[in-house]
Image 1 (cartoon, helix red, strand yellow):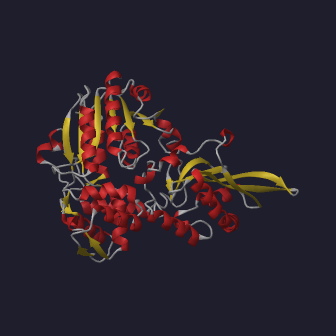
Image 2 (tube, one colour; image 1 turned 60 degrees about the vertical axis):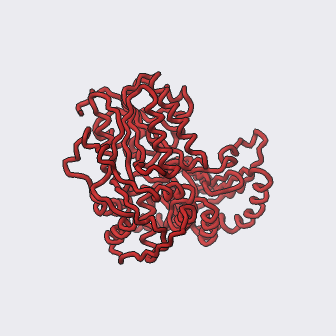
Image 3 (spheres, helix red, strand yellow; image 1 turned 120 degrees about the vertical axis):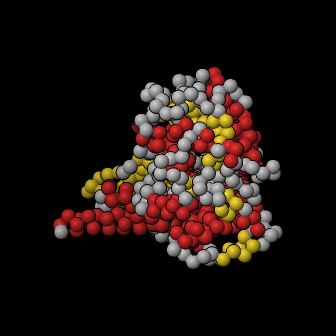
Length: 505
């Protein structure tokens, strides 16, 4: 089963996502050679493992780039999904799987490993049906496909964990649909990685569909009560209303948790089905249980909470790009091309050190807030949540350090050059595309050496609505951005003061 050749090359797709990012590290820890296939290499360059893997760039629906990434690969992990890509994500997933299967055959890949979802009921949610169809489409090819079907994955940063955590912490009383009593079989992310990394080391290709689940079978209601117990909270009170629809429930989750409505909708739709491992598809037919056994749901929750509280979250559900309206994807032509572009650029000078100034910039957002006018930022996030956007509740993975490509409230870190620049691209719902950029350097100013901070808000409107939007928000910039800059500089000076005081003591 194991003891695979040392020169075996493994490809991981979805390496910028929640499971993929953790799988890369788990494979490297077992001295397995790894190549990753991503749409944008910049999104993974800040990962601690970035210089230990081969990085191929391309799209899974493009044959040439997919084939190139698969050349020389023995085992390919297919961890892609598109549930945020609009209402027809199922068609997109089917096309990507077909292309991947074809490219794998041409590249002479020996094994495909796919992580899907458990789907037992005849009437499935669109999300679960699409995951099942993806596995079937991959298996249409000639390369052996090993499909693992998982239920709810529990781990620090997983979407399901974040939904449960925030709902339990914020709602002592919950009005819920009757199907919160449906049973599910969650599995810890640690155990998912155990099965995946073991599959990377098979001596011979394996094909078939196998379910992976933890030792506990319980209802979603029982999961929440278990989490309350682990968090030392009182039992939650459930008021069940039979006519609550998945659409309404997902909208509510978008308000209460960091998971936006667009992602909550397919996840909630899946709760209507019972998600329990099929004994006939028992994974232990091909992979034995780990020596220490599978984690119970209580232990999985405990470990996940410990990671969150220690700021050791390795990857998050929001690491993968979220769905944006088509105009936000296509808008972005450079200024010289004739596209309209608005800029609000402000320059500030300070005696604060470059190191402390960067430290203040890198801590922006999340629990630290936005250095003033936080009420306005909160209201903007609330407005975004009301129309199905991500809002502010995603927060940060780490309170002090950022990675390129990760989410930050309703922004994403597009570019990060430490002690030089930070560029954030907006993922809120907008009639256009927006960026917020900070640049710092050392200059001679008024006869002395100072640090310069350039703060730039850029907006590329889509249609007349975009122009009107800029005109409406621009007056607020006169208050928000100078306040932000002053407080950033004040924080940087405070860091310098405490650093100097500590060195003298």
